[in-house]
Amino acid sequence: MSGSTTPPRRGRFTRGLQLLGLPLILAVVGACGTIPTSGPVQSVGRAGPIADSEVEINPADPLPGAEPSEVVAGFLQATASQLHGDTVAREYLATGVRQDWNPGAGITVYGDEWTISEGAGGDGSAGSVLLKAPVTGHVNADGSYTPGVLLDPDDPTGSAGEITVAGSGEPELSFDFELIRDVDGEWRISNPPPGRLVQEYLFNRFYTTAAVYYYDPDFRTLVPDPVVVPQGRQNAGARLRALFDGPTQWLAPSVRTAIPEGTQLSVGSVFLDAEGIADVSLVGGPELTAMGDETRSRLRDQIVATLSDSEISAVRLSVAGDPFRVPGADERGVVQVQIPADLDPIPVELGEQLFGSTGESVATIDDDRGFDLDGTGLVPLAGPWGTEAEDVEAMSPSLTGDRLAAVTDGGTRIQQGSTGIGEPLDMVSGTDLLRPQYVDDGRDELWAIDAADNTVSRVVGRDVRSVSAPGLAGVEVVNFRISPDGGRMAIVGERDGQSVLGLVRIDRLGEVAIDGWRTLPIDGEPFDVAWMSDLTLMVLAEGQGGAGVWRVSTDGTPATELTTPDGWDAESIAALPRHRNSRVVVTGQAGTWRYVDDATWREVGPGLQAIGFAA
Image 1 (tube, helix red, strand yellow):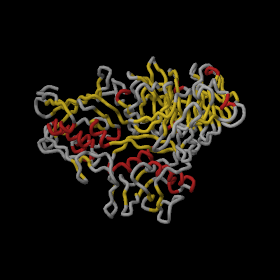
Image 2 (cartoon, rainbow, N blue to C red):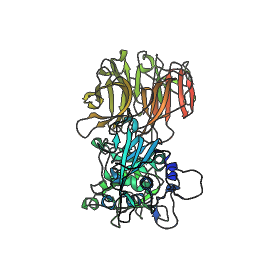
Image 3 (cartoon, one colour):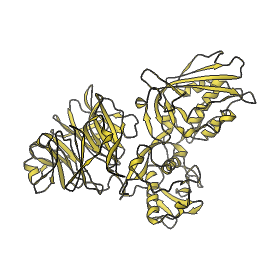
Image 4 (spheres, rainbow, N blue to C red):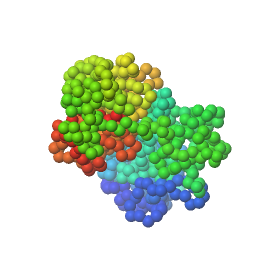
Protein backbone atom coordinates (compact mmCIF):
# COMPACT_ATOMS: atom_id res chain seq x y z
CA MET A 1 0.00 0.00 0.00
CA SER A 2 1.38 3.39 -0.96
CA GLY A 3 1.46 6.41 1.28
CA SER A 4 3.43 7.78 4.18
CA THR A 5 4.67 5.60 6.98
CA THR A 6 5.64 6.18 10.57
CA PRO A 7 8.80 4.66 12.06
CA PRO A 8 8.34 1.37 13.92
CA ARG A 9 7.60 1.75 17.62
CA ARG A 10 9.12 -0.64 20.09
CA GLY A 11 8.72 -1.51 23.73
CA ARG A 12 6.41 -3.01 26.30
CA PHE A 13 2.72 -3.10 25.58
CA THR A 14 1.79 -0.74 28.41
CA ARG A 15 4.45 1.76 27.34
CA GLY A 16 3.29 1.44 23.75
CA LEU A 17 -0.25 2.36 24.74
CA GLN A 18 1.00 5.49 26.43
CA LEU A 19 3.04 6.42 23.37
CA LEU A 20 -0.05 5.98 21.24
CA GLY A 21 -2.15 8.17 23.48
CA LEU A 22 -4.28 5.39 25.00
CA PRO A 23 -3.77 5.05 28.76
CA LEU A 24 -3.97 1.62 30.31
CA ILE A 25 -7.03 1.94 32.53
CA LEU A 26 -7.02 -0.25 35.60
CA ALA A 27 -10.05 -1.08 37.69
CA VAL A 28 -8.51 -1.34 41.14
CA VAL A 29 -10.31 -3.18 43.91
CA GLY A 30 -8.31 -2.32 46.98
CA ALA A 31 -5.12 -0.29 47.19
CA CYS A 32 -2.00 -2.02 45.96
CA GLY A 33 1.12 -1.14 44.06
CA THR A 34 1.36 -4.24 41.91
CA ILE A 35 -0.94 -6.25 39.67
CA PRO A 36 -1.88 -9.41 41.61
CA THR A 37 -2.92 -12.52 39.74
CA SER A 38 -5.31 -13.81 42.37
CA GLY A 39 -7.25 -12.68 45.39
CA PRO A 40 -10.21 -13.56 47.57
CA VAL A 41 -13.66 -14.27 46.19
CA GLN A 42 -15.69 -11.09 46.56
CA SER A 43 -19.17 -10.98 48.11
CA VAL A 44 -21.10 -7.85 49.10
CA GLY A 45 -24.18 -9.41 50.65
CA ARG A 46 -26.07 -9.98 47.41
CA ALA A 47 -25.65 -12.07 44.31
CA GLY A 48 -22.72 -11.03 42.16
CA PRO A 49 -20.07 -12.44 39.84
CA ILE A 50 -16.95 -13.95 41.32
CA ALA A 51 -13.90 -11.67 41.24
CA ASP A 52 -10.67 -13.30 42.35
CA SER A 53 -8.35 -10.71 40.82
CA GLU A 54 -7.91 -7.32 42.42
CA VAL A 55 -6.81 -5.51 39.28
CA GLU A 56 -8.25 -5.82 35.79
CA ILE A 57 -7.92 -3.94 32.54
CA ASN A 58 -10.96 -1.77 31.92
CA PRO A 59 -11.01 -1.46 28.12
CA ALA A 60 -11.58 1.99 26.66
CA ASP A 61 -14.00 2.73 23.83
CA PRO A 62 -12.52 4.17 20.62
CA LEU A 63 -11.66 7.86 20.92
CA PRO A 64 -13.03 10.29 18.33
CA GLY A 65 -10.39 11.18 15.78
CA ALA A 66 -8.05 8.32 16.79
CA GLU A 67 -5.26 7.57 14.33
CA PRO A 68 -4.92 4.03 12.87
CA SER A 69 -2.15 3.09 15.32
CA GLU A 70 -4.31 4.25 18.23
CA VAL A 71 -7.23 2.18 16.98
CA VAL A 72 -5.03 -0.93 16.73
CA ALA A 73 -3.59 -0.32 20.21
CA GLY A 74 -7.08 0.07 21.64
CA PHE A 75 -8.23 -3.14 19.97
CA LEU A 76 -5.25 -5.07 21.34
CA GLN A 77 -5.87 -3.69 24.82
CA ALA A 78 -9.53 -4.67 24.68
CA THR A 79 -8.85 -8.22 23.47
CA ALA A 80 -6.55 -8.79 26.45
CA SER A 81 -9.21 -7.59 28.88
CA GLN A 82 -11.48 -9.70 31.00
CA LEU A 83 -13.93 -6.87 31.69
CA HIS A 84 -16.35 -6.48 28.75
CA GLY A 85 -13.31 -6.81 26.50
CA ASP A 86 -14.89 -8.57 23.54
CA THR A 87 -17.80 -6.14 23.37
CA VAL A 88 -15.47 -3.15 23.40
CA ALA A 89 -13.02 -4.81 20.98
CA ARG A 90 -15.74 -5.11 18.35
CA GLU A 91 -16.23 -1.32 18.49
CA TYR A 92 -12.76 -0.99 16.92
CA LEU A 93 -13.84 -3.15 13.97
CA ALA A 94 -15.60 -2.12 10.78
CA THR A 95 -19.34 -2.76 10.94
CA GLY A 96 -19.23 -5.46 8.27
CA VAL A 97 -16.74 -7.67 10.14
CA ARG A 98 -17.72 -7.17 13.79
CA GLN A 99 -19.67 -10.38 14.05
CA ASP A 100 -17.15 -12.31 11.94
CA TRP A 101 -14.35 -11.92 14.46
CA ASN A 102 -14.02 -15.06 16.60
CA PRO A 103 -12.07 -14.37 19.83
CA GLY A 104 -12.42 -18.04 20.76
CA ALA A 105 -10.24 -19.15 17.85
CA GLY A 106 -7.16 -19.01 20.10
CA ILE A 107 -4.65 -16.66 21.69
CA THR A 108 -1.35 -15.76 20.04
CA VAL A 109 1.03 -14.65 22.79
CA TYR A 110 3.75 -12.31 21.56
CA GLY A 111 6.92 -11.10 23.26
CA ASP A 112 7.96 -7.72 24.56
CA GLU A 113 10.22 -6.90 21.60
CA TRP A 114 7.37 -5.92 19.29
CA THR A 115 7.29 -3.23 16.64
CA ILE A 116 4.36 -1.35 15.17
CA SER A 117 4.45 0.81 12.05
CA GLU A 118 1.73 2.80 10.34
CA GLY A 119 0.99 3.58 6.70
CA ALA A 120 -1.87 5.40 4.99
CA GLY A 121 -3.39 5.42 1.53
CA GLY A 122 -2.85 8.38 -0.71
CA ASP A 123 -6.50 9.44 -0.59
CA GLY A 124 -6.79 9.01 3.18
CA SER A 125 -9.61 6.48 2.87
CA ALA A 126 -7.54 3.44 3.82
CA GLY A 127 -4.62 2.73 6.10
CA SER A 128 -2.57 -0.05 7.57
CA VAL A 129 -0.73 -0.81 10.78
CA LEU A 130 1.87 -3.59 10.82
CA LEU A 131 2.49 -5.43 14.09
CA LYS A 132 5.62 -7.60 14.23
CA ALA A 133 6.72 -9.56 17.29
CA PRO A 134 8.23 -12.88 18.36
CA VAL A 135 5.61 -15.49 19.22
CA THR A 136 6.21 -16.90 22.71
CA GLY A 137 3.22 -19.23 22.81
CA HIS A 138 -0.18 -20.09 21.44
CA VAL A 139 -3.41 -21.08 23.16
CA ASN A 140 -5.42 -23.32 20.88
CA ALA A 141 -9.19 -23.12 20.54
CA ASP A 142 -9.57 -26.03 22.98
CA GLY A 143 -7.61 -24.16 25.66
CA SER A 144 -4.39 -26.17 25.38
CA TYR A 145 -1.11 -24.26 25.36
CA THR A 146 1.85 -24.71 23.02
CA PRO A 147 5.10 -22.90 23.93
CA GLY A 148 6.72 -20.80 21.22
CA VAL A 149 9.81 -22.99 20.98
CA LEU A 150 7.63 -25.89 19.81
CA LEU A 151 5.61 -23.94 17.24
CA ASP A 152 6.18 -24.17 13.51
CA PRO A 153 8.25 -21.06 12.65
CA ASP A 154 6.41 -20.78 9.34
CA ASP A 155 2.94 -21.02 10.85
CA PRO A 156 3.00 -20.88 14.67
CA THR A 157 -0.75 -20.39 15.06
CA GLY A 158 -1.82 -22.96 12.51
CA SER A 159 -3.54 -20.21 10.55
CA ALA A 160 -1.68 -21.01 7.31
CA GLY A 161 -2.02 -17.48 6.10
CA GLU A 162 -1.57 -13.81 6.70
CA ILE A 163 -0.96 -13.82 10.43
CA THR A 164 2.62 -15.12 10.38
CA VAL A 165 5.79 -15.08 8.38
CA ALA A 166 8.81 -17.34 8.65
CA GLY A 167 11.57 -16.09 10.89
CA SER A 168 15.14 -17.30 11.28
CA GLY A 169 14.11 -20.52 12.98
CA GLU A 170 11.93 -18.65 15.47
CA PRO A 171 8.15 -18.21 15.23
CA GLU A 172 7.24 -14.63 14.40
CA LEU A 173 3.97 -12.75 14.32
CA SER A 174 3.51 -10.38 11.41
CA PHE A 175 -0.02 -9.05 11.06
CA ASP A 176 -0.96 -6.19 8.79
CA PHE A 177 -4.08 -4.52 10.17
CA GLU A 178 -6.06 -2.92 7.38
CA LEU A 179 -8.23 0.06 8.32
CA ILE A 180 -11.01 1.91 6.57
CA ARG A 181 -13.07 4.93 7.52
CA ASP A 182 -16.65 4.37 8.68
CA VAL A 183 -19.64 6.57 7.88
CA ASP A 184 -18.52 9.03 10.57
CA GLY A 185 -15.00 9.22 9.17
CA GLU A 186 -13.46 7.20 12.03
CA TRP A 187 -10.75 4.60 11.40
CA ARG A 188 -11.88 1.00 11.97
CA ILE A 189 -10.14 -2.36 11.44
CA SER A 190 -11.49 -4.28 8.45
CA ASN A 191 -9.50 -7.53 8.84
CA PRO A 192 -9.44 -8.66 12.48
CA PRO A 193 -6.94 -11.45 13.26
CA PRO A 194 -8.10 -14.97 14.04
CA GLY A 195 -8.53 -15.12 17.81
CA ARG A 196 -6.70 -12.79 20.17
CA LEU A 197 -3.25 -11.22 20.05
CA VAL A 198 -2.03 -10.72 23.62
CA GLN A 199 1.34 -9.47 24.79
CA GLU A 200 3.19 -11.88 27.07
CA TYR A 201 3.39 -9.30 29.86
CA LEU A 202 -0.41 -9.14 30.07
CA PHE A 203 -0.97 -12.81 29.33
CA ASN A 204 1.10 -13.86 32.34
CA ARG A 205 -0.89 -11.58 34.63
CA PHE A 206 -4.41 -12.11 33.43
CA TYR A 207 -4.46 -15.76 32.38
CA THR A 208 -3.72 -18.93 34.29
CA THR A 209 -3.79 -22.70 33.83
CA ALA A 210 -6.63 -24.67 35.39
CA ALA A 211 -7.21 -28.41 35.60
CA VAL A 212 -10.48 -29.58 34.06
CA TYR A 213 -11.36 -33.14 35.09
CA TYR A 214 -12.67 -36.05 33.03
CA TYR A 215 -12.97 -39.77 33.73
CA ASP A 216 -10.74 -42.59 32.70
CA PRO A 217 -12.56 -45.09 30.43
CA ASP A 218 -13.70 -47.24 33.36
CA PHE A 219 -14.88 -44.32 35.53
CA ARG A 220 -12.34 -45.42 38.17
CA THR A 221 -10.54 -42.11 38.55
CA LEU A 222 -10.50 -38.50 37.41
CA VAL A 223 -7.91 -37.33 34.89
CA PRO A 224 -6.79 -33.67 34.77
CA ASP A 225 -6.77 -31.75 31.49
CA PRO A 226 -4.86 -28.44 31.85
CA VAL A 227 -6.36 -25.51 29.93
CA VAL A 228 -5.71 -21.77 29.86
CA VAL A 229 -8.46 -19.64 31.41
CA PRO A 230 -8.71 -15.98 32.42
CA GLN A 231 -8.19 -14.97 36.00
CA GLY A 232 -10.59 -12.67 37.80
CA ARG A 233 -14.34 -12.56 37.42
CA GLN A 234 -14.49 -14.95 34.50
CA ASN A 235 -12.32 -17.68 36.02
CA ALA A 236 -14.92 -20.05 37.46
CA GLY A 237 -17.22 -19.68 34.47
CA ALA A 238 -14.33 -20.27 32.07
CA ARG A 239 -13.36 -23.47 33.90
CA LEU A 240 -16.89 -24.82 33.58
CA ARG A 241 -17.26 -23.77 29.96
CA ALA A 242 -14.05 -25.65 29.19
CA LEU A 243 -15.43 -28.69 31.02
CA PHE A 244 -18.72 -28.61 29.13
CA ASP A 245 -16.94 -28.13 25.78
CA GLY A 246 -15.14 -31.43 26.33
CA PRO A 247 -11.51 -32.51 26.64
CA THR A 248 -8.65 -31.07 24.63
CA GLN A 249 -7.86 -32.70 21.32
CA TRP A 250 -4.78 -34.40 22.79
CA LEU A 251 -6.51 -36.00 25.79
CA ALA A 252 -9.89 -36.79 24.19
CA PRO A 253 -8.99 -40.29 22.88
CA SER A 254 -8.26 -41.55 26.41
CA VAL A 255 -11.02 -40.09 28.62
CA ARG A 256 -14.80 -40.00 29.04
CA THR A 257 -17.25 -37.43 30.37
CA ALA A 258 -20.58 -37.78 32.16
CA ILE A 259 -21.80 -34.40 30.93
CA PRO A 260 -24.41 -34.64 28.15
CA GLU A 261 -23.53 -33.00 24.86
CA GLY A 262 -24.94 -29.49 24.61
CA THR A 263 -24.77 -28.72 28.34
CA GLN A 264 -23.64 -25.15 28.99
CA LEU A 265 -23.85 -22.38 31.58
CA SER A 266 -27.10 -20.46 31.23
CA VAL A 267 -25.20 -17.21 31.85
CA GLY A 268 -21.60 -16.27 31.23
CA SER A 269 -20.54 -16.09 34.89
CA VAL A 270 -20.81 -18.13 38.06
CA PHE A 271 -22.51 -16.12 40.81
CA LEU A 272 -21.74 -16.10 44.51
CA ASP A 273 -24.58 -15.54 46.97
CA ALA A 274 -24.45 -13.81 50.35
CA GLU A 275 -23.49 -17.10 52.06
CA GLY A 276 -20.54 -17.65 49.76
CA ILE A 277 -22.21 -20.41 47.73
CA ALA A 278 -21.68 -20.38 43.98
CA ASP A 279 -24.85 -20.79 41.92
CA VAL A 280 -24.14 -22.79 38.77
CA SER A 281 -27.08 -22.51 36.39
CA LEU A 282 -27.09 -24.96 33.48
CA VAL A 283 -29.01 -25.36 30.25
CA GLY A 284 -29.06 -28.40 28.03
CA GLY A 285 -31.07 -30.98 26.18
CA PRO A 286 -33.50 -33.54 27.60
CA GLU A 287 -30.58 -35.87 28.39
CA LEU A 288 -29.53 -33.48 31.16
CA THR A 289 -32.75 -33.52 33.18
CA ALA A 290 -33.34 -37.23 32.45
CA MET A 291 -30.06 -38.29 34.10
CA GLY A 292 -30.26 -40.93 36.80
CA ASP A 293 -28.50 -40.76 40.16
CA GLU A 294 -25.33 -42.49 38.95
CA THR A 295 -24.75 -40.12 36.03
CA ARG A 296 -25.80 -37.11 38.12
CA SER A 297 -23.17 -38.11 40.67
CA ARG A 298 -20.56 -38.30 37.95
CA LEU A 299 -21.55 -34.89 36.55
CA ARG A 300 -21.42 -33.45 40.08
CA ASP A 301 -17.96 -34.87 40.68
CA GLN A 302 -16.56 -33.45 37.44
CA ILE A 303 -17.90 -29.99 38.33
CA VAL A 304 -16.64 -29.90 41.92
CA ALA A 305 -13.25 -31.36 40.95
CA THR A 306 -12.82 -28.74 38.20
CA LEU A 307 -13.53 -25.98 40.74
CA SER A 308 -11.49 -27.62 43.52
CA ASP A 309 -8.42 -25.39 43.23
CA SER A 310 -10.47 -22.21 42.78
CA GLU A 311 -11.65 -20.10 45.70
CA ILE A 312 -15.16 -21.53 45.58
CA SER A 313 -15.98 -23.76 48.54
CA ALA A 314 -19.51 -24.91 47.65
CA VAL A 315 -21.90 -24.96 44.69
CA ARG A 316 -25.63 -25.20 44.09
CA LEU A 317 -26.75 -26.54 40.71
CA SER A 318 -29.85 -25.60 38.76
CA VAL A 319 -31.20 -26.21 35.26
CA ALA A 320 -33.19 -23.46 33.53
CA GLY A 321 -33.83 -21.89 36.93
CA ASP A 322 -35.06 -25.06 38.65
CA PRO A 323 -32.99 -26.89 41.30
CA PHE A 324 -30.97 -29.76 39.85
CA ARG A 325 -30.88 -32.49 42.48
CA VAL A 326 -27.64 -34.44 42.81
CA PRO A 327 -26.76 -37.17 45.31
CA GLY A 328 -24.73 -35.90 48.24
CA ALA A 329 -26.25 -32.41 48.28
CA ASP A 330 -27.67 -31.05 51.53
CA GLU A 331 -31.27 -29.95 51.99
CA ARG A 332 -30.48 -26.65 50.26
CA GLY A 333 -29.00 -28.44 47.25
CA VAL A 334 -25.45 -27.41 48.23
CA VAL A 335 -22.43 -29.59 47.41
CA GLN A 336 -18.95 -29.01 48.85
CA VAL A 337 -16.20 -28.34 46.31
CA GLN A 338 -13.39 -30.90 46.46
CA ILE A 339 -12.01 -33.79 44.47
CA PRO A 340 -13.91 -36.87 45.72
CA ALA A 341 -11.50 -39.09 47.62
CA ASP A 342 -12.52 -42.25 45.77
CA LEU A 343 -11.85 -40.59 42.39
CA ASP A 344 -8.79 -38.53 43.27
CA PRO A 345 -5.87 -39.53 41.00
CA ILE A 346 -3.65 -39.02 44.05
CA PRO A 347 -5.01 -41.30 46.80
CA VAL A 348 -5.52 -39.85 50.25
CA GLU A 349 -3.94 -42.91 51.88
CA LEU A 350 -0.54 -43.49 50.35
CA GLY A 351 2.16 -46.03 51.00
CA GLU A 352 4.73 -43.41 51.96
CA GLN A 353 7.69 -45.72 52.43
CA LEU A 354 10.92 -45.14 50.51
CA PHE A 355 12.75 -48.26 49.35
CA GLY A 356 16.39 -48.39 48.31
CA SER A 357 18.94 -50.85 47.02
CA THR A 358 22.33 -50.71 48.69
CA GLY A 359 23.97 -53.03 46.18
CA GLU A 360 23.66 -55.89 48.64
CA SER A 361 20.05 -55.73 49.80
CA VAL A 362 16.78 -53.89 49.27
CA ALA A 363 15.71 -52.04 52.39
CA THR A 364 13.19 -49.55 53.65
CA ILE A 365 14.85 -46.16 54.03
CA ASP A 366 14.26 -43.41 56.59
CA ASP A 367 14.59 -40.32 54.39
CA ASP A 368 13.26 -38.10 57.17
CA ARG A 369 15.79 -38.65 59.96
CA GLY A 370 18.52 -40.02 57.69
CA PHE A 371 20.29 -43.34 57.29
CA ASP A 372 23.70 -45.04 57.13
CA LEU A 373 24.74 -48.22 55.41
CA ASP A 374 25.72 -49.64 58.81
CA GLY A 375 22.02 -50.08 59.56
CA THR A 376 20.87 -46.78 61.05
CA GLY A 377 17.57 -45.80 59.42
CA LEU A 378 17.80 -48.74 57.03
CA VAL A 379 15.84 -52.00 57.45
CA PRO A 380 16.53 -54.81 54.93
CA LEU A 381 13.43 -56.56 53.61
CA ALA A 382 12.62 -60.04 54.79
CA GLY A 383 13.25 -62.85 52.37
CA PRO A 384 15.46 -62.86 49.27
CA TRP A 385 15.13 -59.13 48.51
CA GLY A 386 16.82 -58.36 51.82
CA THR A 387 19.70 -60.80 51.48
CA GLU A 388 20.31 -61.56 47.80
CA ALA A 389 19.86 -58.33 45.86
CA GLU A 390 23.35 -57.67 44.53
CA ASP A 391 22.17 -57.45 40.93
CA VAL A 392 19.16 -55.13 41.45
CA GLU A 393 19.72 -52.25 39.02
CA ALA A 394 16.35 -50.50 39.26
CA MET A 395 13.11 -51.16 41.10
CA SER A 396 9.54 -50.14 41.76
CA PRO A 397 7.50 -50.90 44.90
CA SER A 398 3.73 -51.30 44.65
CA LEU A 399 1.39 -48.63 46.06
CA THR A 400 0.86 -50.57 49.27
CA GLY A 401 4.52 -51.55 49.54
CA ASP A 402 3.75 -55.27 49.72
CA ARG A 403 5.35 -56.13 46.36
CA LEU A 404 8.50 -55.17 44.55
CA ALA A 405 9.47 -55.35 40.88
CA ALA A 406 13.16 -55.09 40.04
CA VAL A 407 15.42 -55.11 36.99
CA THR A 408 18.13 -57.77 37.42
CA ASP A 409 20.73 -59.74 35.48
CA GLY A 410 22.21 -56.82 33.60
CA GLY A 411 18.86 -55.47 32.43
CA THR A 412 17.62 -58.74 30.93
CA ARG A 413 14.98 -59.70 33.52
CA ILE A 414 12.26 -58.07 35.60
CA GLN A 415 11.41 -60.05 38.70
CA GLN A 416 8.40 -59.52 40.95
CA GLY A 417 7.88 -60.74 44.47
CA SER A 418 6.59 -60.03 47.94
CA THR A 419 8.51 -57.60 50.13
CA GLY A 420 8.14 -60.27 52.80
CA ILE A 421 9.06 -63.90 52.44
CA GLY A 422 8.84 -65.83 49.19
CA GLU A 423 10.96 -66.14 46.09
CA PRO A 424 10.53 -63.49 43.36
CA LEU A 425 9.27 -64.69 39.98
CA ASP A 426 10.53 -63.84 36.51
CA MET A 427 7.91 -61.66 34.78
CA VAL A 428 9.49 -59.95 31.75
CA SER A 429 12.62 -60.76 29.77
CA GLY A 430 14.45 -58.47 27.38
CA THR A 431 17.74 -56.88 26.41
CA ASP A 432 17.83 -53.45 28.06
CA LEU A 433 14.88 -53.28 30.45
CA LEU A 434 14.18 -49.97 32.15
CA ARG A 435 12.90 -49.34 35.66
CA PRO A 436 9.34 -50.77 35.74
CA GLN A 437 6.27 -49.23 37.38
CA TYR A 438 3.12 -50.43 39.06
CA VAL A 439 -0.21 -48.84 38.15
CA ASP A 440 -2.48 -49.46 41.12
CA ASP A 441 -5.63 -47.46 40.35
CA GLY A 442 -7.72 -50.61 40.65
CA ARG A 443 -6.03 -52.24 37.66
CA ASP A 444 -3.11 -53.97 39.38
CA GLU A 445 -0.74 -53.60 36.43
CA LEU A 446 3.03 -53.67 36.11
CA TRP A 447 4.48 -51.78 33.13
CA ALA A 448 7.88 -52.35 31.52
CA ILE A 449 9.78 -50.98 28.52
CA ASP A 450 12.77 -52.57 26.79
CA ALA A 451 14.96 -49.69 25.61
CA ALA A 452 16.59 -51.91 23.00
CA ASP A 453 13.52 -51.82 20.74
CA ASN A 454 10.83 -49.87 22.68
CA THR A 455 8.88 -53.04 23.38
CA VAL A 456 6.21 -52.17 25.95
CA SER A 457 4.80 -54.85 28.25
CA ARG A 458 1.84 -54.71 30.62
CA VAL A 459 1.73 -57.41 33.29
CA VAL A 460 -1.70 -58.22 34.73
CA GLY A 461 -1.46 -60.93 37.35
CA ARG A 462 0.97 -63.34 35.67
CA ASP A 463 -0.21 -62.51 32.17
CA VAL A 464 2.31 -60.48 30.14
CA ARG A 465 0.59 -58.47 27.41
CA SER A 466 2.27 -56.54 24.60
CA VAL A 467 1.22 -52.90 24.20
CA SER A 468 1.21 -51.09 20.85
CA ALA A 469 3.23 -47.88 21.13
CA PRO A 470 2.98 -45.68 18.00
CA GLY A 471 3.54 -42.65 20.24
CA LEU A 472 7.12 -43.78 20.85
CA ALA A 473 8.07 -43.98 17.18
CA GLY A 474 11.46 -42.35 16.62
CA VAL A 475 12.17 -42.04 20.36
CA GLU A 476 14.91 -43.97 22.14
CA VAL A 477 13.42 -44.25 25.63
CA VAL A 478 15.80 -43.70 28.54
CA ASN A 479 13.30 -43.64 31.43
CA PHE A 480 9.55 -43.40 31.93
CA ARG A 481 7.01 -42.79 34.66
CA ILE A 482 3.21 -43.18 34.54
CA SER A 483 0.93 -40.51 35.99
CA PRO A 484 -1.02 -41.19 39.21
CA ASP A 485 -4.25 -41.57 37.20
CA GLY A 486 -2.68 -44.23 34.99
CA GLY A 487 -3.59 -42.39 31.79
CA ARG A 488 -0.41 -40.54 30.83
CA MET A 489 3.25 -41.47 30.60
CA ALA A 490 6.21 -39.11 30.94
CA ILE A 491 9.18 -40.08 28.78
CA VAL A 492 12.82 -39.00 28.73
CA GLY A 493 14.86 -40.17 25.80
CA GLU A 494 16.51 -39.22 22.52
CA ARG A 495 14.85 -38.16 19.30
CA ASP A 496 16.69 -37.14 16.13
CA GLY A 497 19.93 -37.08 18.13
CA GLN A 498 18.53 -34.72 20.77
CA SER A 499 17.61 -35.41 24.39
CA VAL A 500 13.88 -34.89 24.85
CA LEU A 501 11.17 -34.85 27.49
CA GLY A 502 7.66 -35.74 26.40
CA LEU A 503 4.20 -36.96 27.29
CA VAL A 504 2.19 -39.73 25.68
CA ARG A 505 -1.34 -40.95 26.34
CA ILE A 506 -2.21 -44.41 27.54
CA ASP A 507 -5.34 -45.03 25.49
CA ARG A 508 -7.68 -47.59 27.07
CA LEU A 509 -10.96 -46.99 25.20
CA GLY A 510 -10.11 -49.91 22.89
CA GLU A 511 -6.98 -52.02 22.81
CA VAL A 512 -4.51 -50.50 25.25
CA ALA A 513 -1.99 -48.40 23.32
CA ILE A 514 0.53 -45.59 23.81
CA ASP A 515 0.02 -42.67 21.45
CA GLY A 516 0.03 -38.88 21.07
CA TRP A 517 3.64 -37.80 21.62
CA ARG A 518 3.91 -34.22 22.96
CA THR A 519 7.28 -32.61 23.60
CA LEU A 520 7.70 -30.60 26.80
CA PRO A 521 10.34 -27.85 26.67
CA ILE A 522 13.30 -28.10 29.03
CA ASP A 523 16.88 -26.88 28.99
CA GLY A 524 19.64 -29.44 29.32
CA GLU A 525 19.56 -33.15 28.56
CA PRO A 526 16.90 -34.97 30.62
CA PHE A 527 17.69 -38.48 31.82
CA ASP A 528 15.22 -39.27 34.62
CA VAL A 529 11.72 -38.18 35.57
CA ALA A 530 9.16 -38.50 38.37
CA TRP A 531 5.59 -37.26 38.92
CA MET A 532 5.42 -34.65 41.69
CA SER A 533 1.63 -34.32 41.35
CA ASP A 534 -0.97 -35.18 38.73
CA LEU A 535 0.09 -32.10 36.72
CA THR A 536 3.78 -31.58 37.56
CA LEU A 537 7.01 -33.45 36.86
CA MET A 538 10.41 -33.37 38.51
CA VAL A 539 13.11 -33.98 35.92
CA LEU A 540 16.83 -34.71 36.23
CA ALA A 541 18.69 -33.09 33.34
CA GLU A 542 22.36 -32.71 32.51
CA GLY A 543 23.43 -29.11 31.99
CA GLN A 544 26.60 -27.03 31.87
CA GLY A 545 27.00 -27.27 35.64
CA GLY A 546 26.24 -30.98 35.89
CA ALA A 547 22.99 -32.69 36.79
CA GLY A 548 20.17 -30.37 37.82
CA VAL A 549 16.50 -30.68 38.72
CA TRP A 550 13.68 -29.00 36.83
CA ARG A 551 10.06 -28.66 37.82
CA VAL A 552 8.01 -29.06 34.64
CA SER A 553 4.30 -28.47 34.23
CA THR A 554 2.52 -30.80 31.83
CA ASP A 555 0.65 -27.83 30.32
CA GLY A 556 3.76 -26.81 28.35
CA THR A 557 4.51 -23.58 30.22
CA PRO A 558 8.19 -22.79 30.94
CA ALA A 559 10.04 -25.14 33.26
CA THR A 560 11.69 -23.94 36.49
CA GLU A 561 15.24 -24.94 37.39
CA LEU A 562 15.72 -25.60 41.10
CA THR A 563 18.79 -24.84 43.18
CA THR A 564 20.79 -28.03 43.78
CA PRO A 565 23.87 -28.95 45.87
CA ASP A 566 27.30 -28.60 44.31
CA GLY A 567 28.92 -31.82 43.19
CA TRP A 568 26.01 -34.05 44.11
CA ASP A 569 26.37 -36.18 40.95
CA ALA A 570 22.67 -37.10 40.87
CA GLU A 571 21.73 -40.23 38.93
CA SER A 572 18.15 -41.14 39.84
CA ILE A 573 15.01 -39.41 41.14
CA ALA A 574 11.92 -40.74 42.93
CA ALA A 575 8.82 -38.87 44.06
CA LEU A 576 5.69 -39.47 46.11
CA PRO A 577 2.98 -37.51 44.26
CA ARG A 578 0.89 -35.15 46.35
CA HIS A 579 -1.39 -32.21 45.67
CA ARG A 580 0.82 -30.33 48.14
CA ASN A 581 4.10 -31.05 49.94
CA SER A 582 5.31 -33.78 47.62
CA ARG A 583 8.24 -35.92 48.72
CA VAL A 584 11.14 -36.09 46.28
CA VAL A 585 14.43 -37.95 46.76
CA VAL A 586 17.50 -37.94 44.52
CA THR A 587 20.42 -40.35 44.77
CA GLY A 588 23.81 -40.78 43.15
CA GLN A 589 27.32 -41.90 43.95
CA ALA A 590 27.93 -38.85 46.14
CA GLY A 591 24.88 -39.34 48.37
CA THR A 592 21.11 -39.23 48.75
CA TRP A 593 19.18 -35.96 49.11
CA ARG A 594 15.60 -35.09 50.05
CA TYR A 595 13.82 -32.10 48.52
CA VAL A 596 12.86 -29.44 51.09
CA ASP A 597 11.98 -26.47 48.89
CA ASP A 598 13.05 -24.94 45.58
CA ALA A 599 16.33 -23.74 47.08
CA THR A 600 17.07 -26.52 49.57
CA TRP A 601 18.00 -30.19 49.39
CA ARG A 602 18.90 -31.99 52.63
CA GLU A 603 21.45 -34.80 52.48
CA VAL A 604 19.98 -37.81 54.27
CA GLY A 605 22.50 -40.56 53.61
CA PRO A 606 25.06 -42.17 51.30
CA GLY A 607 24.41 -43.02 47.68
CA LEU A 608 22.09 -45.88 46.75
CA GLN A 609 22.03 -48.08 43.69
CA ALA A 610 18.28 -47.62 43.18
CA ILE A 611 15.37 -45.89 44.93
CA GLY A 612 11.59 -45.94 44.73
CA PHE A 613 8.55 -44.86 46.73
CA ALA A 614 5.62 -47.12 47.39
CA ALA A 615 3.41 -45.10 45.06
